[in-house]
Length: 323
Ligand SMILES: Cc1cc2nc3c(=O)[nH]c(=O)nc-3n(C[C@H](O)[C@H](O)[C@H](O)COP(=O)(O)OP(=O)(O)OC[C@H]3O[C@@H](n4cnc5c(N)ncnc54)[C@H](O)[C@@H]3O)c2cc1C
Image 1 (spheres, rainbow, N blue to C red):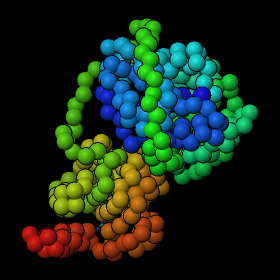
Image 2 (image 1 turned 45 degrees about the vertical axis):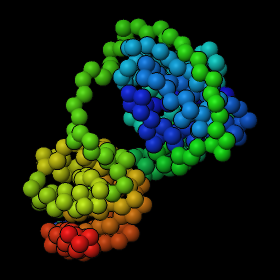
Image 3 (image 1 turned 135 degrees about the vertical axis):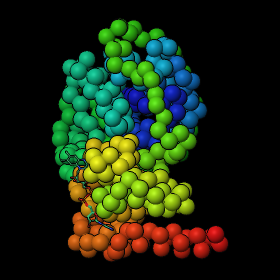
């Protein structure tokens, strides 16, 4: 059996959880094994939605203490279930949370974990391909252990429901949680930009780098993003300068984007930035330097001063829309 730990945020599934379910279903198909899922409550588990991804059995860990993210507690639910069900594979999305929870599971069970896998070849030991160094390197490794623990790199597969939906059996269980399991947990949230689409999910991202010149310079990026129904992102140089919050940073130590369009303005395209934006389907660079790494890697580039180029694009868009 392949057991997927379904990451959610107060009951909301995200795109990467769906990718992990898709990856798990494909692996279960190759193993000729059923796909099952574990959900940490008390938020209602979307059984029909999970069934659409082929989940045949859903195990719901019910406890008010699991209402919000608590890595060790969530891991305890997975570890307890793993000990009981003895699955062949336990996997989760290769997000900060998925990786953290499965790392706890691995430590509790004394098993190895392969994080951020893009492909898996089953065998007695599995051959896994995984992302290293923020995605700039692909590594092949062998994963042993009685239960194979792995996380799935973002975009390793496209999220796709099963051809035939399953109707999962749902079983609730109460995990035994200690005070130590709840030492790290979310106790307060501060929403940044309420109602805004997250960078990870945005279809259009307008990113700014040091070349924008100042915090005020981001106004033209905001305007263009607004017209395109997108959001603003930035480089680390920009967050280090205090022009924008870290929540907007794209890159190895920031967000990974998968937008349809990324417009990178005054960003040089250092490898640490590129690993965060290379998942975009189309990259348009606006830069004064035709030799800048982002220009050589982008699908399209406009060589010029962003302070002239962006207002010109915005004006054309407004004209085309009759505004
Ligand atoms: C461990 C580690 C982790 C890191 N993680 C990240 C990360 O997550 N994200 C990240 O972004 N960086 C990260 N970095 C930093 C990264 O190496 C670069 O230093 C950073 O991305 C550079 O930011 P930038 O492109 O905005 O600035 P610069 O490199 O200074 O580039 C500015 C660009 O703007 C162009 N420009 C200047 N004026 C204009 C203008 N008027 N119009 C148009 N173009 C103009 C220039 O030609 C240049 O290409 C990390 C570094 C390390 C060591």
